[in-house]
Amino acid sequence: MPSALKRLLRHLALDVSPLRDSRDYRLLFGSGVITMFGTMISMVAVPYQMKQLTDSYVAVGLVSLAEFVPMVVCGLWGGAIADALDRRKIIVMSELGLLVTSAALMINSMLPSPQIWVLYVIGAVSTGIGCLQRPSLEAVIQQVVKHDQQAAAAVLSSLRWNFGAIVAPALGGLMITAWGVASAYVLDTLSFLLSMLLLWRVSSLPPAADAAPASLKSLVEGMRYAVSRSDLVGTYLVDMAAMIFAMATALFPFIAEELKAPQALGLLYSASAIGALIASLTGRWTARVRRHGLGVIVAAALWGVAVALTALAPNIWMIVVFIACAGAADMISGIFRMTMWNQTIPPELRGRLAGIELLSYASGPMLGNARAGMMAQLGGTRFSLGAGGVLCVAAVLGLAAALPGFRRYDATTDEHALAEKARREASATADAPA
Image (cartoon, rainbow, N blue to C red; front, side):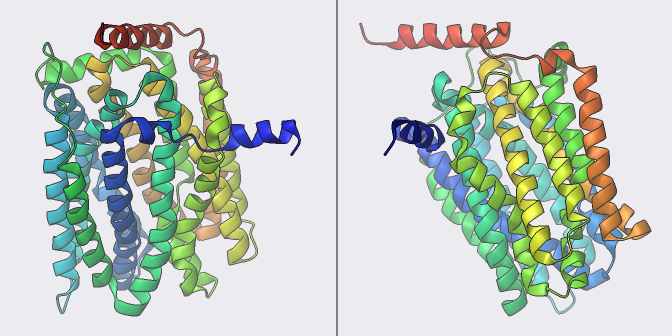
């Protein structure tokens, strides 16, 4: 084999060193695979069930909008407690709460007349609990993975997500059409039970001795830090703009029906993750990129282009291809954003900043699906997809022009990245045996 080809394959090969070197990361990774699998199946079941019960674009889109307020409140508070309490305890207790909400959806689906309000209320409660948990999950990666392995961990985390996002929606679509939505909720409930067995074995992750208690003051401190850094603000705003204008998963049940391909519903949900999986499996090259801000801008713009092209696709298969391309672009953006966050944010602020990050990458899809449903109500699914993609590209380019600090970010020269790298190296030296 030519040496050039060998080097290319080596750069594209997956780096599994975080899994090899960290027991706690392996447990968290395994738990994430299991819960992502169940959650993605429920992600197909909820809008499908809402469409069955209402046959309304707006009602399906409002499922996401109902989750917005608990996401904001609990995401911020979850960040504050992630810096103040034992992160393992937060993760385990939240997982128990998610188990209960999944069981509630299962019970409702088995009633002779399932209640629409339950889908909204339990969806909001589940989102709130998940947002309490997520900052701790994000902040823990910085603790259990070495500094120079953060990019590899970002790729592995995306791979974990993609595994569930590909297999689970396809399986969920088949399960729902064959056995009804209750079967999806049953599997989701079982996934949380299995996940808790792994999370229980994760080592205790107590806060720093001088950690600030969870309070409004500590939340404000985290927000001030985030706002003081234009590079961080850029990661939040660009992703939010991309999701608000181009996210359209709420339209998938209607697209499948319009194209007379109901059996392809699960594939539509999986398509984005298929593209993202390819990006993850070949994503070792991202560790060599240092201009992360520019990388996020380019990837987010390509996401918008791909979504706009779905409006022109003549059949279900071309739509799947364009959605997969969009998913690949979004995953590259996510890898660069996660690497920036974990390599530059001080550990004593990591949980609170993870809460702010959650608002950016979670609020965008929620608002985007509501936007997609309303635009589709006005002009149909193709109009919603095409106009949304074009607006996404325009917004991303506008933000790139307005945030030069974000656009010019370089991990090899940025003061925050260099300071965090030096701190980690000093800590490793101090902990090394004499």
